[in-house]
Length: 373
Image (cartoon, rainbow, N blue to C red; front, side, top):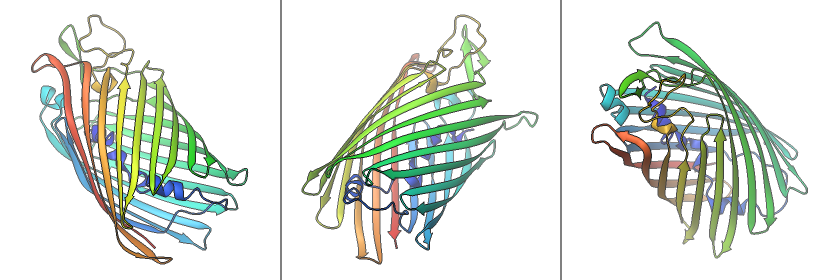
């Protein structure tokens, strides 16, 4: 479970999220044509997250290959070597290290204007195992100007506790996705996406404790949770090989958490071989119904998990891509580096070491090589 926190940051940098630059997305808009399979691709990445006493780093690999212009197969491997001395750990236990590995296999099938995708995922660490299966369908309509996407994921996690062989529990997850992407003009693209997640089972952390009247007690979470997220995105071509994007995401759940995310980014080609990206992101969240920094009454559920508290974060980031080698119609080799600086401010989670509201800075670094062929 130590890697749970790192998943929110370093884990969120999965191979699937990094390669499609904003300007490349706009170039793909031009012209109505049948839906295409993803490009043949190979990637090797190193990622490093450091902040709040947590360090997570490791390699990631991705290979994708199409067959007969109808089927594309993919596989990825991801490692997090986690060194955990976060505030939760240093105030209640000893710092520790562990490793999480994950595998992802996928197949895409293109038929006329539809793309169907199947995927299986497995993640394992010493005290946590996660398995999931996903299916997605994307259909282009109205002369390929509109894309409608549907998706479903089913996951089952096994939760253990180091040092307590008798402790074992499970958590089950159902995720439903609906999205619409619309070409507004030859230079503008808009999308709207809805995601609904239903969780059932052990949804807490067996190591984390709460405080009631100043005394330490095991945290207690409800065993069910339903969350929803609605996201809007707008991408525009500014001309002269420039592009910009803006997006807003609203999240709410049955634990009474409400969150807002605002993000804006800008991309620009420099010469023929360099692409620069920059972005800023603001996140604001209200606390869960049963969260308390120090509860003054005994209740059925209680948590002092700061990820369920009232907090804000602000991030600035940039990415620089260099095309090292290009042979049109054959292959392309790129070297990419990205860096993100994140500031976290917690309104009602106290650092018990000094009695002040907790805050910290985090850095996220990614270096990778990607080749299309």
